[in-house]
Length: 127
Image (cartoon, rainbow, N blue to C red; front, side, top):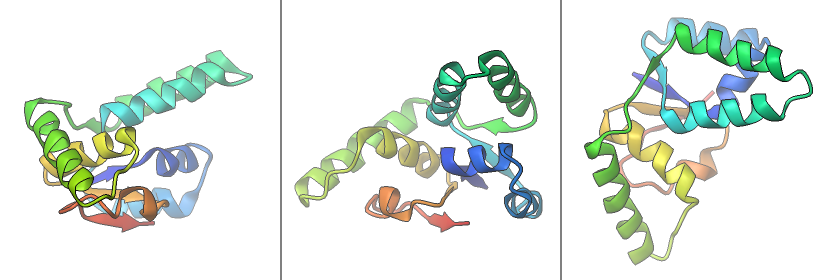
């Protein structure tokens, strides 16, 4: 399973056919709650707000969402402690996104490898 990062989803919504084809051929793709939160944040800040909100809502009807559950939270705590101990802290929002994917056995698809590559055990795929 591939969990899509915000930048991937935004580019897909903007019509990037290469990404759409990759997502279609990848099999099972999903997003996580923090990704949806970022999408809605952008939609509510958009010039054409109502249209942007509708686009996000339509997108969520056609994609699975990994849960932010106890295992995800435990993984977040564990990875935060590991990164802090090694002196490699990361943005907590990115760590939460990565922890959700990791807890559910999903690879994280992104265009910003540097945001996630320091999370131990997380498979990062760049599209």
